[in-house]
Length: 163
Image (cartoon, rainbow, N blue to C red):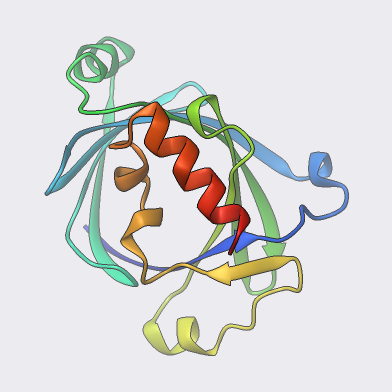
């Protein structure tokens, strides 16, 4: 089990040379959102994740799955699958994980930065290309994103345009 301490930001503009950064292709779905039980395909790996409640900091447990187990659990998902490309952008001493969503949330972008402790998280100065911080807004948790129907997704994307 590990403690996940991260801040989340909307994106004003994508960084230059985005394709020069390493990238993972992710598909994830939620079996439950309270508690959070997620299945994820990350490239060729399959992972089951359990997360505790929380916004800035929460407990997280990850376990490997077989492709067969992933597909079985995926069939039991609650809501829509989240599809995205995750770019890993160094921001020494941290790593920015920039998610560029596809599928239902096509065009939506959000960045997450993980920290070793709360003090480091609070002291972090975001790059200029970041937009508003949404760490404390649970609407931006992927588990919340998975619960919207297509009309609600469209309303959400229009709301973000105004932020």
